Length: 255
Image (cartoon, rainbow, N blue to C red; front, side, top):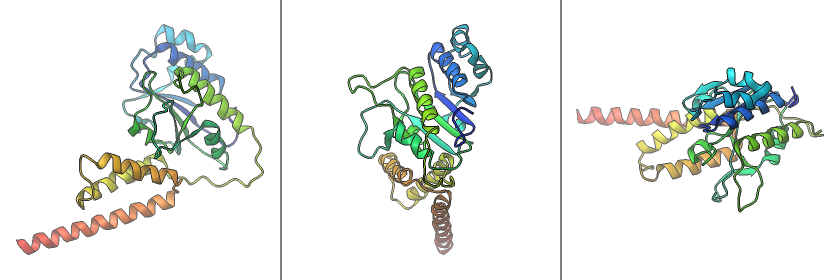
């Protein structure tokens, strides 16, 4: 594979693309860089149109074999590591945006990543904050502050080129075994955490989104391992068990 031994099963994911020419161009890039699979979430155009096929050229098989999902969570369900591209510059200090070069060199510190996904957002407005939080890491492509947004297919071409270039670098340090908690594991854990915090009265409906996002940002920034996320989930399960037991005792007293 052109991307080297550190990566396998690379998936390019487009969220709600609305231009068949862009989709066709991305399919062609998937062929250029030997991407394993193209996935599309809720396309807003005919991705099988003649326009898309003409732009795809030798990448037409990626259009024919692409998997379509109605939800981004479903599109990344089997991915070990999820990266998301973002061109916005209106981000706050809690955001986890890094340069694409730093991100790709970080991935090379691991021996093997079996299922790597890279997400690209809508042409007009990119990815939402909640969608960005589904990724293990988010990155931006350095561009002019006056015009930071790139054409979708141009962004994909730069990212795949940089990933390919980074994978060919030689590092002297000993490679680590990849054991980062997957995007799905982190998401499922936070569904349980949010439910628990509502039960104990820590979260309120009008502030829950902001608080959970900050907590999730902290977990993602810490590069939490599978073992660590399981420990956190075990704590949540135990607290829920205690709450359920307490509720049953209270109900028995009043009956």
